[in-house]
Image (cartoon, rainbow, N blue to C red; front, side, top):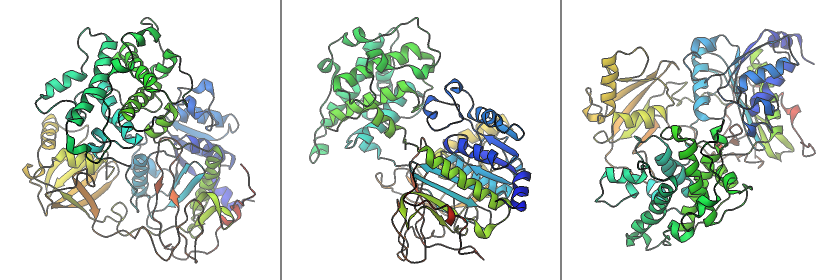
Length: 618
């Protein structure tokens, strides 16, 4: 039974929800039914058919509409007297600044990507607003509370970067199907349908050393009035035939590897066969380009079938024909989207044809889509459990009941007869550059690396800054913003193309750079150390960013880890894998180590009573 204090805290609270997907739908419903009166929701996504099996506030008729708005309208039907404000927008938009966050008592995250999570974490820190973070993946789930100065922030422990593969492996010596997927998605798809001005490592492997870049580009450019099918066959023969033969000419490469087999279209499908089976109607109108399907055109129905080389070749040509006949205006602007059926079909076919060349087992479209989109399939029950835990922690936050805050993990298998494992939150990490302002160190070749490399690979990718400002002493090297003068924009653009040591204020070994994001109100210092050489396999970025102070060890020998239900030893507890939300994500493990208790922490957990025993059923 809720106390008067709890009821008052709930009724008077102003809550911000970020994300209205798998967790978000459950969370909004639970907040409304728990008595919260003022709820704001931010979500930039629209509803897709694939959402309907678990995002229960949405129906078939809502496909294409704003998730935030439809979720709001659905909940108001059974709680009409509460205030729900929806924003169909990106939480990283300038309107959602620190002042916007300051108006809320607590922020609740139901996001599905690392970048947005980091951004919200920084805004909450700057605004001094508690954050309840969450994630699910399959049967695993997690809820954590982040309060400035009292508990660790979301970034106190570094999250592993997505798995990357050396360019030479992807372009020359693939040994796994994922290598073929990366090649098809990030190189071939991008070359044919993406930004033509973007550098692409496919160029490196697409012609011999004597060919100019213009000649290489001509291979992928569709010639004026060139028949689409002839263009497709030409591309097919080039990337699956000629390129493989070119690779085979380097005998040294294949001394200890299985030699690939060049594949040419004429050897798989006689000319004009594809055109006879296809179902292209030049006059047909498709309202939703993402619903175009080469499978449907060729009469292939089951996404879990593994296509033969011949079928993959047909899909390759047919999907390319559909792109150039039905979506020609998008060519040059596309990027791979796992929810775009035609894109998935093209990438699956291209990856399978390449896999066939290198003796790698073929995969179905269903399997390939999961690999290409990093999909971990969702369990609706896990989302519901996590949403309930978020609300429990939010109520504690509103009551300032910090001694009872808990990080709670939803496990796949029982640990000590529990499927919910509460853990006392960790203290702030003193080496965290986000909440502790710890300086960072950067190893980089200052004579070769450009400022653009630093901005893209470090400032944006590693530090997660959206509107960065970079200074060397009193010299401003780079800035972005709508209020810049034309000459300033030109100067900063010119600086991007300069090598670090040749900037107006040279960046060399020993330089201290100040990097700031005004929107996030975040500033950090980076000490530059010049380094000549990097291992292409282990250090593909050609630069390494690290903290001045070592973070706590990833493994503490005195503590057994919890991993999918493995039991712990002693009185200390460890953190299991930290899952993400339901769709386009990867499983991200947190630190596994000895618990660092908060001051005056009670040993009893208010969540112990919520533990699910082995008899519990979905």
